[in-house]
Length: 101
Image (cartoon, rainbow, N blue to C red):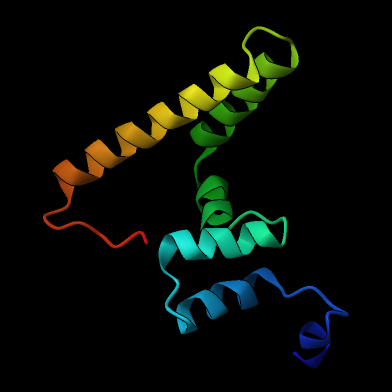
């Protein structure tokens, strides 16, 4: 841990996840913490590893952008729509809102 504190070593994904829990950062805070280190949040990686359909959808989306069939702006609109569908689904399925802040 000392090397991380001195800035000589980058913290592991597990350490970032644990720090987010210790400091009660919430989901958005944890995502921000990972992004500050240029990393994908541990929970996101775990979910993608378990969901081949999500991997396929993301790969297809990347292929569409790289081949110029959709723009980066269109990709961002699609991600915003994914987020909206997710929030609507969670609001219907869960009896109470989960804290994502």
